[in-house]
Amino acid sequence: MPNIALSVSVQTEYTAKKATKNNPIPTIIAYVTDDGTVLGGLGDAEYLTRAQDLISQSSFKGGLGESVTDYAIHAKELPVLTVIGVGKLDKLAGNIAKVAAATYTAIKNAPRAVILWGDTICHKHFTQFGLALLAASYRFDHHKAKAADSDAIKDITIISNRDELDAYQAALAFVLATAKGVSVARDVANEAPNVLTPSELAKKSKQLAKDYAEKISVSILGEKEMQKMGMGCFLAVSQGSDEEGKLAVIEYYGKTGRAGKKSRLSNPIALVGKGLTFDTGGISLKPAAGMEEMKFDMGGAASILGTIKAIAEANLAIDVVAVLACAENMPSARATRPGDVVTAMNGMSVEVLNTDAEGRLVLCDALCYVQENYKPKAIIDTATLTGACVIALGSVRSGLYSNDEDLLFALESASEFTNDLVWHMPLDDSYNEQLNSKIADVQNIGGREAGSVTAACFLQRFIKENQAWAHLDIAGTAWKSGSTNSATGRPVALLAQYLRSQAD
Ligand code: BES
Ligand code: MN
Ligand code: ZN
Image (cartoon, rainbow, N blue to C red; front, side, top):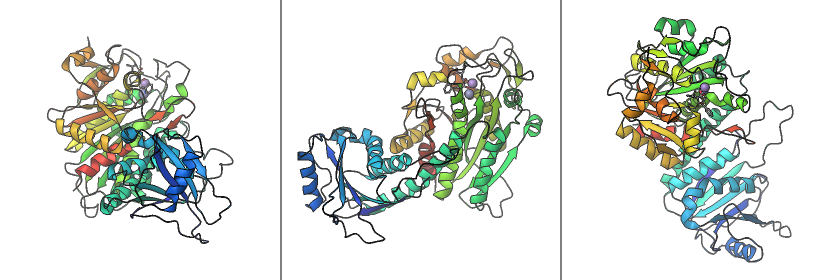
C-alpha cells in the first residue's frame, strides 16, 4: 500500500496557507450536489466563490462522480480547486464509496490534498469514505518488470466543521489499521496460484507472528497431523494435489498479551477462512473459460489474514483464534472421485458427489478443529463458497448465514457501519434435507436449487448445539471479475469492525 498520510481536522473555516518548500500548495476538493449546492458550510472563504464561479462557467451539473478543476495557472499562490459532483444529497450515504473513488482520481497527481467535507459527514460516513479513498490507491504490480510510477499524493487532510474531533480521530485510527488489513488481504488474494501455494498461504501468517510477536502466535499443521486428527474431508480435497495441504492456526492475544501464556486462549472468537489457492474442480473439472479466477478461491483465508493484521494494528483488546484451511483442488490419479465416502474429524461420514464442492469439505474439518480445541464464543467463517451466491446477490452483498441472533445483529451492524454489505440468508431445515445421503451421514451437494443455502446448511451440520456461528459466502464480493480482475479485500472491514464492537 502506498504511504499516504491521512489526517482529519475540525475547523470552522479553511484558508489555504501560502506554499512552502515542504508544504506545497494543496489541491482542494469541494463537493457539489446535483442542484448546484456546494456542501460544507465552512464559511465564506475565497474557495467558495471560486467553486461557484467554476460551476456557473462550466457544464458541470454536480452528477455523481463528475468533476471540474480550476488550476489557477496564472495565480501561482492559489491552490488548485476541484469540485466533485455527489449527485442527490439524500442518496449520498449510499454513494460515499463512489465519491471517494472520484476524489482519489482527482487528487492522485497532486502531492497534497485538502478535502472539505464541512458539516456533511459524520464519523460513520467518514469511516466509509476513508476506507474507500485508501482502497482506491491500491495497486498490485510487483510481477511487472517496470512498475508504473506511483501516484504523487502523499498527504491528505479531511476537514469537517462538526465539533466531533474525538469521534473522527477514533474513526481515523480504525480506518488506518483496517486499510492495512484490507491491503494485506488484497495482496495475498491477487498473487498467482503457482506462487501462492497452500504452504505459502499458510506461511503468510508467520509474517504476522513476526511483526506482532507480543500478541500473535502461529502454528502450521501439515497433512500428517491432519491425518492423526482424522480430518478425512480436508484431506480428500488435498490428496489430488502435489502441494501439501496446510492448516494455519493463528492465535491473537489481544486481552493480556502472549507473555507467560502456556495455555490456549479461553473463549476466543474464532475466524475460519477457506483457502483454496486454486480450485480446478478436481475430477468434477470446471470449464476452461474463466478458470483462472479460481486463484481467488482463497479469498476467505486472505480476508482472515487481513482481519488479524487490522486488529493487531488497531491493538484491539480481544482474543481471537483464526484458522486458514489451505489446499489446492486438482484432478489426478490420486484425486477423490465422485462417489467416494470420507470421514470428518467429528466422525461424520460424507459422500462426495461432486469434487467441485470442496470448500465445505476443508471448512467442515476446520470448524471441527476450532470447536474441539477452543471454546469459541462465536465462530465466523468466510468462504468463496458457491457460484449460486454470485447469482443470488451479485457483487454487492455477501451472503450472511447464522444460527445466533446476537451474532447476526452484531455482524449486520458492523456491515452497515463499514459499507461492507451483507444480506441475511435462510437456514431452514427444509433446505437441509437436500443433503441427506443414501449411504453416508451427509452428502456434499444439495442439487441445483438454493446452492448457497445448502452449502451453508452443510457447514451447519458440523456446528455443535448452542455454538454461535455465522458463515459469510463471499463468492461474489471477494474479487472483481472481468477487466478489473482484482481482489477487493472484503470482508476485512466488516470483520474488523465486528471485532472492534466486541473488544473490551
Ligand atoms: N469456489 C467455487 C465457488 C465459486 C464459483 C466462487 C464461482 C466464485 C465464483 C466452489 O468451490 C464451487 O466450485 N462450488 C460449486 C458447488 C457445486 C458443485 C455444488 C459451484 O458453485 O458451482
Ligand atoms: Mn469448487
Ligand atoms: Zn472452491
